[in-house]
Structure formats: structure tokens, C-alpha cells
Length: 349
Image (cartoon, rainbow, N blue to C red; front, side, top):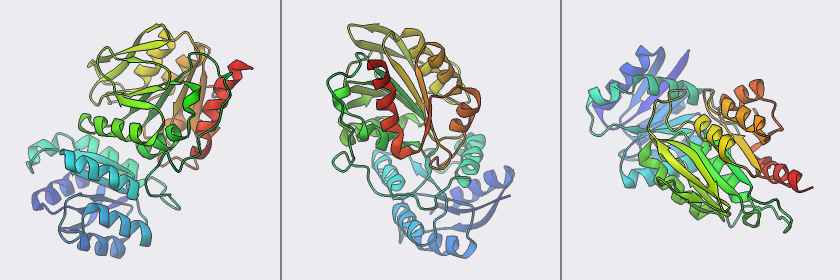
């Protein structure tokens, strides 16, 4: 049984979210109408999970998360409106300690949010299982990260595909901030995330790593020292490799694993197209996306890495990958960048 606290200043949203969760078998033990009440109810009930709105009276969602993580850490899921201001605030909430987030439908209409019933219930259950004990918070900064040093003998045309879901954004930022720019990796990132947020996340990756990052555009090319993030709502395909650059395109076909973009699609097309050295990495997240893609990368002669259970906020995707794929490495988040670098160095030996 999962116990949840709902914090939202909209009475309609509190009521509707409560019905959605209870219909999904989740017990709503309390509903908070503002930030101060949210902190009090979380302390009183010690739930398995809390859903937190960003914009609330008395204390913002970000302030609630900071206070709860400092005093009584529990897994928290941010549910925020799709605005540019709230996109920035949502990522700040992840820095403060929230496990994941969902985009709130525009307005408070219950019809719109009921259309996301299955997604909401699944995400709340996944976040409730997250390990938040001893979790690091705060911004990932490229100025503070320890970038791995490499020699000029690094292998030519190395391509890295990283996939992540629940709990992934901070780990993705950390791993990429530690990768050496001198290695000249071509980086493709697939993070399960709504389309309103992927552009902002790509900007964060550009700001916090030494790589030139952007949200992927149709027909975009990716060269050494560059990276693209899959656009929310579209699969990212690798369609060509020429003169050291990869060409990517969007595909709005059926979802896989009930998600789009799917990690498997990018990894499988990379395995088919890339002729240089290729490494795939699966990070924290719920579900099974990425295992089939890693298997294709291995079959194509590439390397496969997964995050370990101890440092995964949600040990779903890495667990399936470990069970189904002959992985080259299973590593804690603090050593994944090192593992990626060593995987590519192996080809240069």
C-alpha cells in the first residue's frame, strides 16, 4: 500500500488528483492547500510519497521540497503547469531534491487530467519507491565537476547514447559534466520528458557541461564535442553518418514502452548506422526501455553500461538491462563518466 500527500492550491486539482490516485489503489492520507500546510502534513503523516505543486501560497513548492529534504526526506513528485517560468522552477525543484515531475494540464479542468490517469498513478508509484536517503542536492556545475583527463590518443568517431527516466536529469547532468571535451564524443541523450521541458533541459546541459548541447532538430547533425537531446513527444533516430557527423531525425510513430521518445529507438538506429566506436548507457528509471537497445549495441560490437542499484533513484530500467544484456560495466553514478571514458579507451589500446 502506498500512502500519499497531495499539495496544490487548487481545490479542483486536489480533489481530482485524490480521486485518480485512490482509483489507482493509492491511499491519499492528506491534502494541503498551501506550502506551510504541506510541510506540516508531510511531517505528521510521514507518507511514502508527496505530489507538490510549484506555485503555492506561503511556501512555494521549491521551498517545501528544500525544507522536507532537510528535515524529513521523502520521495516527492512535482506536478507543475507548462509555462516557461514553471519549467525553470521545476528543474530547480529537482536540484532541491524532488525525484521527478509531471506537466499539469492547462487549467484545472478535471477532463484533461483524467486523460493522464494511468501515467499519474504509475509515476507516483515509481517515485514512492525511490531511495532518497542521503541524496545529494544542489546544482550540478561544470566548474565544480571533476572532468576526466584524456590523452590525444583517444579513439576516433566515438558515439555515446545515454538513456534515462525517473530520477534521471540530475544524473545525466553529472555524467555529462564529467566527460572530457577533448575526447570529442558525439552524444545522444534520451530522457523521458514532456516536450515542454526538453528544450529547457537541453539548455541546462549546454550550460553545465563542456559539450555544445541543444534539443535535436529534424535533420540535425552531431559532430565531435556536440550533443543533442531527444525532443519530447518524438522518437530520435540516427539516420546517417558522414564525414564524422551523425544525422538525426524525428519519428512520431507509435510509442514504445508507453513512451515517446523511447531509448530503444535511438539505440537501435545508432547500432544500425554508426560505424565508429559506440557505447550505450542506461541510467535510473522505471520500466524496461533501453534493454533491447543496449542488446543491439552489443550485437553491433559496442559497449553497454548500466547504473547500479545503490545509486539509482528507481532501479527499473538498469535492473532489466542487467538481467537481459551482457553488460560490460555496472557502475555507481559517480563512476559512470569514468566507465564511459575507459570503454572508449579500450578501443585505442
